[in-house]
Length: 379
Image (cartoon, rainbow, N blue to C red; front, side):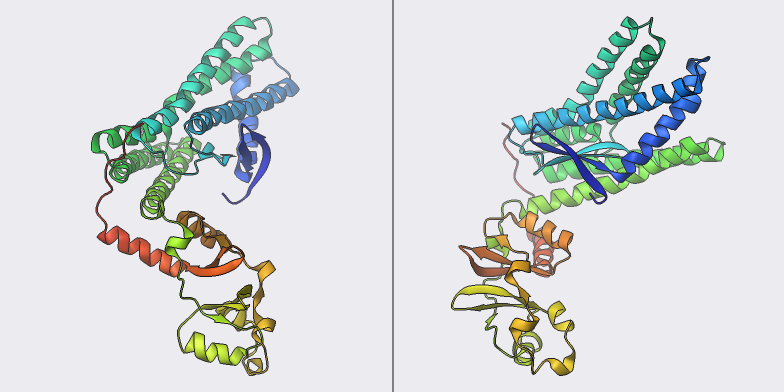
């Protein structure tokens, strides 16, 4: 997720903060200090309101992090890696390295977050009750108890990919035996929920509750976008999940010598044969790659006098992948680094090229021709 930076590593999971998180923490602290706590606890000093408001705002996002860590812990204990958790404007999101293997795994991971939020709410409620003599501490924990109940309930709503939407997907997966079909069902229900939020937000906006209305519409937009991304991710995983870079590479790549003329390579291999890239090497040693982008950086009248070695991207600057790299990860790398192709390396030698165009064409072909995946056995 762009605009994020790492702040910690917990239980083997990188904890990141998105830049939008800083905005919402500031806005929440301001709202608590200027509106919420002055209404519920009149008579404090302005400094006290801001101290309590800031503390409550920061502690709220600690509880959000604990909510996400609960998902991560359950996933990791079931053998599903969780590379990172990102806190952002809407709360937090745990990034799973793969889709769950079974409906029961999906349900266990999904329900862990809301269950943890209910536990946090209960603990905060007990602390608030026990600290009645310390008014400011009581105010903070009473607020955290209330908001964590709201967080748990909201996450249980069927807005995919909220936890409730994932619970729905798990149930549908159990009934249909198909992750892809279950994802489509959860996504459609989630879209209806998001559109309902949009309508409700518009009504709030028209009746004078502008902030509430805009917030609901923003959440609805986020849910629609996240739901569609999740459907696309599930489809990609279904198509590419069992394939590696070696499975999807083109082993028939062209290799040219570094001392060859740039003009000859362009004429024979790019214009002549339609290759967008060629591997540069000699005696089996991979030295670099020459792409259309590399060629475009050279003036046309210099092509005959320029060697491939002078125009290529040298090996130490070439992004490569191992033959065993998952195909879905290769596609993600191509998109992230804005590359058209990436060489596949085995034992220090280039054994193929994976191009984004061919990967996407394969995805479209499989989605058109392949049957629905068979039921996945529950563990």
